[in-house]
Amino acid sequence: MINYINKFRKIDRRGRIRGDEASGSSSSDLPLDKKVTFEPEDGEKWTFDGDGGICLNDMNVACIIDEERRDIGLLCGLSGGLSRYQGFVWGKGGKSMGDFNAQVMALQDKIHLRLGGIYDDLTGGLRSEMDGGELWINNINVKKVLGLFYRNPSEKFRQYLIGIRDKLDLILSRRCSSSSCDVIYRQAGMLRRDVGLALEYIPADAPCRLVAHDRHA
Image 1 (cartoon, one colour):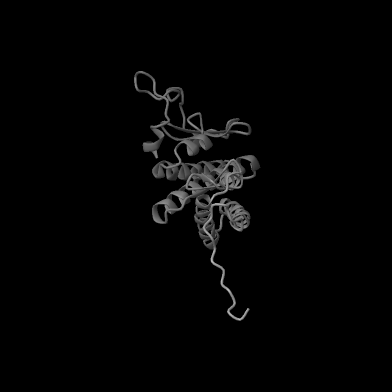
Image 2: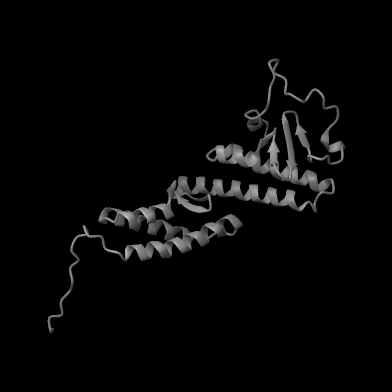
């Protein structure tokens, strides 16, 4: 884990990790303090407080995940670190700390969603994620695309929406079992309905549709 910790550690001009000089004993020998400090090795310090969330070397872990969303090694390292942090807290009698456990679960879900998106991108060319409460597919906000179509409908835009519809169908065809995937699945279902309704509208520049005539009419 030290390989990714180095990216976020604070080092003084002499190359020493700030704060390490004053630590005389291992955190595993001490009871939980106010910040729920966990220092499994030099240069790695986990803390938690209700307002600031979980931090690694004084950096908010949620922010690290957002900034490094494509770094597989770092994301896996963070997931493992969070698991060890939670195990440490539970071993100290903190298993009933609801806020802490909820934060760990939310961060793990966030990491797994990122990793799943990377996997989908590498294997199937499809990456989906929730950001700001809205569904994004391959860095495209589906809801905003719908709004743009209704403001300026065109046949070219309609064909683009057909591609969006097919991607939504692919998401709905491979539902997984996690809270983050459930959110994506629900959003994809609602947007699939909205895209279907939009595709019923035929823009003015659309080519003429051939209508079959009844020979006996």
